[in-house]
Length: 88
Image 1 (tube, rainbow, N blue to C red):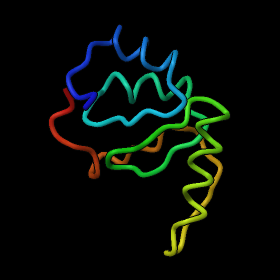
Image 2 (image 1 turned 30 degrees about the vertical axis):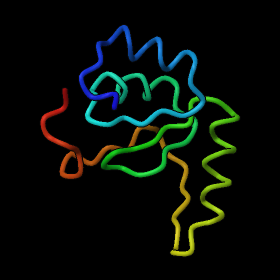
Image 3 (image 1 turned 180 degrees about the horizontal axis):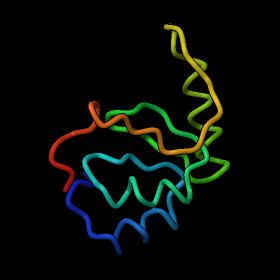
Image 4 (image 1 turned 90 degrees about the horizontal axis):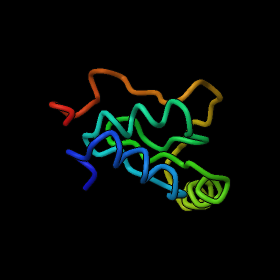
């Protein structure tokens, strides 16, 4: 889990990871504003931080049998009513 990590730890993880889950971390969500190339999910989002991470999420999306919505917009998309509480 990345819940409870410090801002510095979030920055360090985001520098080396291809993919990262936000868990209940406000710091990961903040880092995603600058670095995310693709986001999967909104409540506990997974962010692709590199081209490799983006490709991995897109490959996973190919396996989903339900309908999917792909859209272009500024990331992260974090509807307040879908976020875990508290963010720590």
